[in-house]
Length: 87
Image 1 (cartoon, helix red, strand yellow):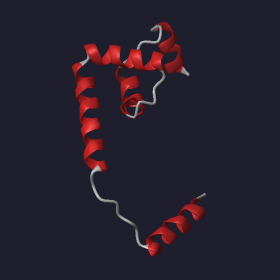
Image 2 (cartoon, rainbow, N blue to C red; image 1 turned 90 degrees about the horizontal axis):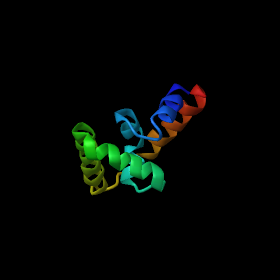
Image 3 (cartoon, one colour; image 1 turned 180 degrees about the horizontal axis):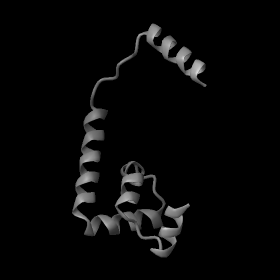
């Protein structure tokens, strides 16, 4: 709620926290135009956020090139059982 109020007074501008929250959506081209513009405007003037987004993008790219791994069925069963017990 407080975050929404702060954003209202900033007139849609992004801050560093917003960039951290929306970086994955930005990299995946899932931000609407108005949010994408605000995101890019913040990046254009904030070196640390530029570095964060560049590093995240590189990391995602590197991870996507790794071969997929299938977990053993016993592990899957164990995890599902645990999730059901905890919920």
